[in-house]
Image (cartoon, rainbow, N blue to C red; front, side, top):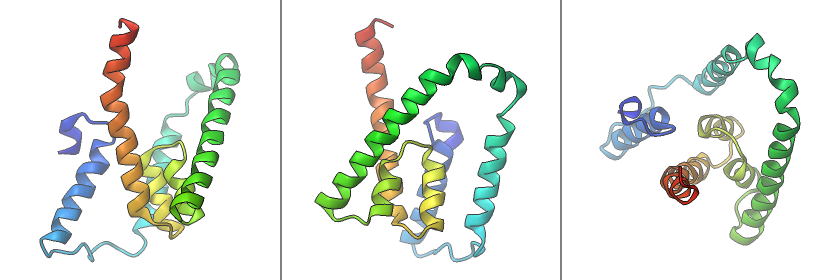
Length: 146
């Protein structure tokens, strides 16, 4: 379902919705091994490592400054947003940070599970972020004349 939909994060969303539906229908997912979070982190690390090639590293010099600026601004926005959510909505600080951090939803959810943050809030926030990007991007492209 997730791969077929071509929705960003569709695989994790499909898996999440399938397990959630099972839970709601009375079929809890208590069959998952207790070390599944560790295994998922290892697999995520492998997936990221596979993408690092000599070609990737050769472009680092020409993109380093923009990447540092983008990363710095996104992290600053994440910090400010997490402090706002923590203070105004009384979320615990770790959940607020993981919910507002720039990053792949899969990685943030795995971290939330392993660090015992509120993973439901983290996944919901990232699903909404991705959904908004998917909806708004065509409008931005239309505005830019693309």
